[in-house]
Image (cartoon, rainbow, N blue to C red):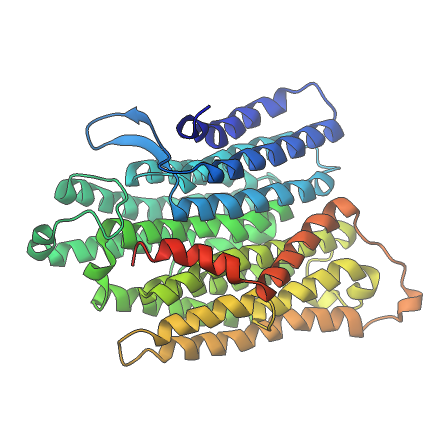
Length: 488
């Protein structure tokens, strides 16, 4: 099979597998084994596509001359396919034990597999139409993961997630109509798709359109003022769903913004305009607001959700600098935040799975009861704070460097806001570790009740990667810089 046709496999095989899983005449354990094994196989197939050389593109369906469903593999696609595939498979392994007593496990595996196919289609989208189609598909197939428990609270959270997502997608769709009318093409092109004449003649309306598209995709990324779906959805969703919602799904909103700014509008058209300043202001407001709300929050998973609101806006801030260094920092933080936040949510899920404790104030001595889980929680917490030599330090360093490389005189405001927001995670994350290890009963009086290797292994792998790639970031930075240099 040539590279072009190979692009179909990561998109459609998981969707077919997801549809088939509930119909398997198998018990819960067997169904989980098959789902996890298939998930790892799909991840290997997806990552294998990265090794095809030269031009890799596939037009699946050409509706009109400019409207088509097509896939390709550029640097951004390769980055997203690699990190999404690895994280999705490892969280799937974690879900095996987490769902061992869940009678609704078949429904979870169905939507988990189908969601992976939607994410692959979104990652490899070659144009705005394809991206939008799989973006909407992603919303529809991840909503059942939020509503998995089918109680009143989870249903309400899923509806809120859907409403917010539809509002954001509608703003993006509004912009897509203008792109078609003024550019005549939806294909992603480094530097933008508009002629200079069209930009000059329609600068005012097009900047409004692009800002609305940024705000629309920003809903999925949890950008203020449409961020509240995150702290509503995370506490009620099962821990594996919370992990990927935070670590992966939010990054798809970032992908939409990157494609809009750097591949449709053209960075030179937006740099130094009110669009850049408004976007950057919203991102920095979200950074500080999210950390502040996380510090005040007492519900464990909700605290982590507010943390995601803040940390994903670190990425948005890097994108908004519209500098090469800032964009490299943004991609680095996409990767490291995903590794870290998936581990944090899986750690929280492991605690809830074993103890049913959901409030931070109730976690006194939990580190003595579940030492391995809380050790991993603490390691990645240091990464999220930005303590060297973790990956979080590397990404935040590059974000600050990108901000300072801006030509505007207010370039220092970004690093100042990042520094303020870096102090707050130390308070809202390390307080959990301190309460868990240094308060409560003596260690000798506490019976160990750790989760199994199936749950610890994924957390351990992601934790190790967040540290190892922080110590040896050269290859990752070189790869990211290689495709960033082609678009800015």
